[in-house]
Image (cartoon, rainbow, N blue to C red; front, top):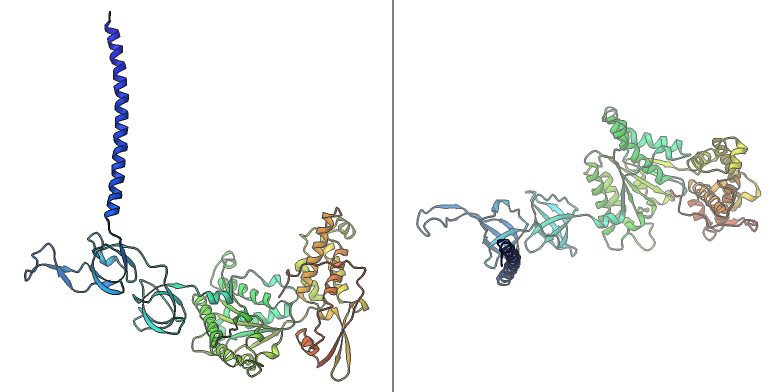
Length: 559
């Protein structure tokens, strides 16, 4: 007999079963609805025609009939045209704009999407591809420029939106619509110029105190005290020539000038010391030989672009150093070319930049050369590269100052050296004295070359006559490498006197094969020995059988 309790339990079980079935049905219905939605979207996409694109030129001028008013009725309501002039399909067309867009929001040169009925429905921004052209002239309305392509063909294009382009800029253009969209960085200048904010300070340079003082007087004073130069009617120099044998710090000085100028100008303007340290200057290091180009007029054009870049950077008051390394390779004396007369046009281009109508405000030209006698005299005359500073090879005192930049107390020194001298500072001083004495003594083991002059006289030159800052840096690097190798092989840790003296012997030995005996006079001039016409160079050979020569670091030092 079924009791009421059994009936209730049976009904509850059926209710649960029906609820589960209902949930399954709901889930199936939801899935079916989602699938139908996807199918409907796919169907709409299949029925939608493909879109085309065009370049918006300008809003359509004039008025059109209000579609809400009586069509064709005289005196009917009219309103400003919601239409635009568009370049599409290689022709100019007047097209309507969808009501959800305002034609006033469209900027000339932007790409717009069109329906199959040629209705403008979307603003797609500026194109990111096209042809490249060089701006030759800005037209009076400042909205159009005269440009040329790589074939030399001239044409006029409009500047899209708020684009600002100057003469010499490379711009991205669409020839068909006649618009320029973007200024493209000058890759050709980037390949020729190393643009950087130098972090070199005068305190990083050793042995050139007199030359640094000359640079300060010639370059920094006009920047820091322009009002005094104006009062005394003194024209600041336009450029400086640093000349002398290689490896003695010409590039370092140029970088330090840029850094020092930025900091001192910031202090003059009332900035704090911390802000002055963060002040920016720019150092355009022109890769001289790469500037030369076999195509007529290309080298001159690249020189113009470099000075345009310098003027652009200097507009906001930041000092700019334009540094021409190996200046003699670019600006040789006109008429001295053997197979080319390129210097006949390249030199006048530099002179035009130095003397031109466009001033070089906040721009200083610094040239560096090992062969200053080969540079065209017109460049070196007063009014152009006014100041000539010779960077000499270091003497003994200068060598000690340079060693102080590389043999610092922070380096690890051998415990035996510290015990012998009493302190790290004493070790540094003793090692410096020892290695400088070894480098500068005039003993037979330091003889380098015997040169014979055209008058019949001869002279013995020692390694001391050819030492350089780069060589000193290389010697210290060699000593560090020897110390590291000794630690690896289980020896004592730290730099010793023997490491440095061994490095000196190796450095001298590897320089014995460098003199150019085939052209002795040329070698003597480059090496900084222009005291007379050299007709013969004899290298003194030394016995290095007791030395284990090492291929020490060669790239750690330079000008």
